[in-house]
Each structure stands twice: as C-alpha cells, then as structure tokens.
Length: 344
Ligand code: UDP
Ligand code: MG
Image (cartoon, rainbow, N blue to C red; front, side, top):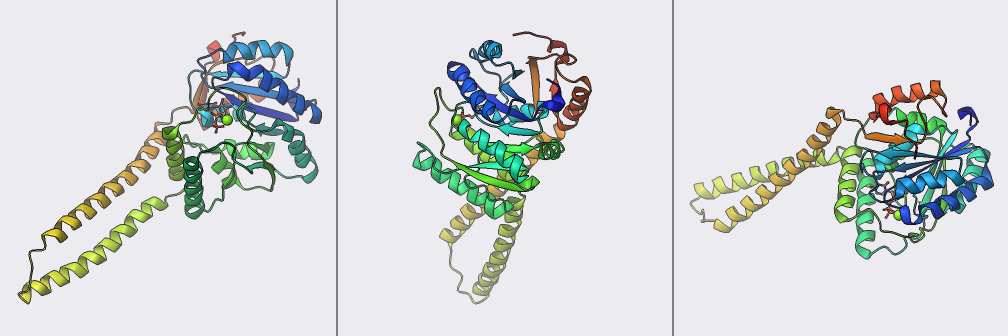
C-alpha cells in the first residue's frame, strides 16, 4: 500500500502473548475494518521468548495489513511503543495492548472522533480498574497524585490506549529522551484532545508483564523524567534543618553559659538518626537524577530491531524510510539493516 494512503496505523506492543495473539489480532482487525480499509497493523515483538514471532508470521497470511518488528531483546513496553511509533506511517496512530484489555470496539469511535471533531489526540480513560488489588490501586493513586502535584499533569485514569494525529507523532519524535514515559510525554505535548471512557477488560490469557519492582521502577522513571521537584525538596529540607540547627545552637550555648546544660544523650542520638536518614534520602534522590542523566548522556539507542517483516527498500516507500532512519538516529533507535531481509 502506498504510505500516503494509510489513514490509520495501529501499534501493538507484544511480549510473550503467543497463546492468544492470533485471536486478539483478528478481533482488533475486525473492529478497525469497520472504520477504515486503509490501515496498517504494526505488532512490535518486544523480545518474546515464546512462539510470538512465528505466530505473527502465520497471522500475516490472514491479515495482509499486518507488519511485524522484532526487537533484539525485551526492552520493555515503553521502548516497544517507541519502535512502533517510529515505524508507523498512518495519518493517525492508535496505540493499544495486545491482550484485549483495551477494548477494540472503541477503535471505530476513536477514528470517528478524530475525523469529525478535528482533535489531535483521542485519549481513552480507565473507568473501572478490573481485578486490581487494593495495594495496586493505592499505589497508582499515590503515584498519579505525586505527578499531579509535582509536574502539574493530571494523569488519573490515563492509559496508553490512545489515538494520536500525525502532527502529534511528529512532535513526539522530536523528544529525544531515552527514559520515556509515554502517557506523560503525550500529556506534556498538549494539542486539542477529547476523552473516551472505557472499562479495563480482564486479560484474554497469559500473565501481566509487570510486577511490584517494575512498577516502582516505572513510577520512579516517570517522576524523575517529569519533575525536578524532589531535588528542590532536598534544598528545602536542608534549609529547614539549618534554621532548626541555629535555634538549637542558640539554646545549647545559652544553657551552657547559664550553667544549666544537661547531658542530653537522647537528643544527640535522635538528632543523629534524623540527620543521617535525611542525608541518605537526599543522596538517594540526587542519585536517581544522576542515574537518569547518565542514561541520557550515554546516548544509547532506545531499542534495537533484529527483524522486520519488510525490507528497507521493498514494500515501503524508500524516501519515507530514509527519513525515518535519520529520525531514528536522532531519537536514539537503531536498526540492524543487515538482518532486515528475513522472512518469517
Ligand atoms: N508488553 C511489552 N513488553 C513488556 C511488557 C509488556 O511489550 O516488557 C506488552 C504486553 O504484551 C501487552 C502490553 O504491553 O500487550 C501491556 O502489558 P500487560 O498486559 O502485561 O500490562 P498491564 O495490562 O497489566 O498493565
Ligand atoms: Mg494487560
């Protein structure tokens, strides 16, 4: 298909979803077809260790619009999304999960809103969180509360299920950071947007790729990427303890001069404990930012592509692809061109 004719690209990051992948893809394609016939479906295999890549190959026989990108290892959903976005050619790009937790029946509505309302972003907002534990719900509340207070971005209920106009995708491609937090980045970009509510469906099969540690990591990345407030907090705590130190020093000197100084062993221990933990916490916060700076200055690519279902110069428009490659270098993605010509 001529790239100029592609109206909608749908990007699906996939990690070890072989069991139910072909069913998910068929369901999703069914709903896309209700809205448009000029589309491409890009499945990004995020270094799956199961049969995902070969299932994708088989699915291509039934879904001609399906293209696959295989990353050289598991880079995480955020990076897989980057790969998909940098390869998408549609005038609008829809991002969704491959486990049908993002209801595909919303796709025609999203496309319709984009076409008729002229909005640049159609956000799908979670209404009810299915089967989430109290701990998880509390965790997300605290995290989004922090992001809201610190970075002034209201991401309550935000999901990665959204439609982006080409203009937004181009603007996003100019954001060169390696530490990406997709939903925060699109919120930062602005543009006219509209919201659609959806209920998170239960997973069609398999297991979620997230655990407590990866979720806390994502939350830390997001906070560090979006605000430098924790650093200022360190300075503020420093100032407050400096004022307290002056007051306490004056009191101590006065008591010494007045000859009423007591041994004060408990006070010394408490002060030591408080000050030490505050110092350690501050160093930890500084460390998070230094680690983020270190990751950024290393300038490594966001992801590495090991295989694609198309050749550089064949199926796809050569000129467009050259442009993409240049963008890829700027934004930090890298393709192993020598291995591109691999059929499934
Ligand atoms: N995913 C991915 N790489 C990963 C983890 C997940 O591409 O390292 C994909 C996964 O296949 C799914 C989507 O990201 O299509 C959402 O993942 P998951 O269902 O595990 O997350 P949850 O719905 O629990 O937030
Ligand atoms: Mg899921």
